[in-house]
Image (cartoon, one colour):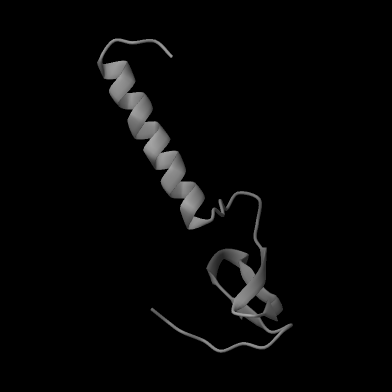
Length: 68
């Protein structure tokens, strides 16, 4: 993992035209802005986990022959 120190307004350039900007810092939290092309999916980790759990749950339901 690469760990960087950035100040408000500073940017991190990632591949494929993705740019992260530090927008605000306060009391242990950081607000980050992300600019990316529309074809690049950006998700918070907890949302991706929730979607994976829901997909697994739906898959198990369908395997049992139940309809949603």
